[in-house]
Image (cartoon, rainbow, N blue to C red):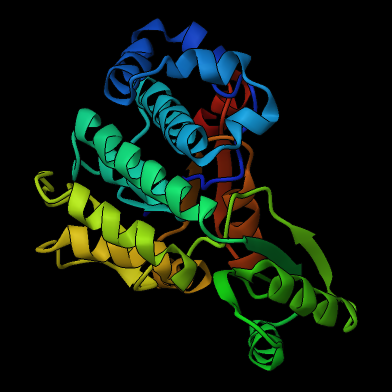
Length: 302
């Protein structure tokens, strides 16, 4: 079973995916559709923005999604097929478009609503996120519980990588406690504490904004960050996606379930190769590759 994976926020960089776009001009339609929905020139943002601008949630989310879909469509032009999809946080939205749950236009309508709601909530909260490496999730959970203030595990990325999030002082204190146990820590370049209760205003606004969006059943298997397993009930996607904003990303559990279901090939579409690295750290006896450029596409299709 081949799974298409889609990159999450924080992986963005200037110029990402544009060499693929030059090699596959028909894919300009993705960026044209995005720009029409968003109200700004997305390709120009990707091509000409400074890092700080591109890192803003309202730009990073649609930019990564467009890049991911461009990479996927370039591979499909060369005969690539897949049996299931999954994404890391933001990546679930590209996964929904890839699986036929959302049209391209509705995909960008939804990500516009999500990015604007999360950007507004981030400006109201002094939140932060920090990756903790080389420490077991159970130990990270214990340290968060013992730290004064609000800090919780937000992303379960691998057996030795958990991202914590919450109020900035509490995140910094918990990170220091983890470092004292010889863990490596790295603050993330994000605007606030995503996947925590600090994003509840965003979840509420987002839920209200997507009530009229049409969600279809996927044409391939769809795996969920919230559940950590395959999603089979698509009856109330607005509620699930609102919950997604304030719930931990159970990516490690998701990967294990995909492998148990027969997945042996994982192809990541989107900037950098973060998810490819997580697959390699988490699962044995599988193939994991990423596609973000003309050169890496050759590797995927080899």
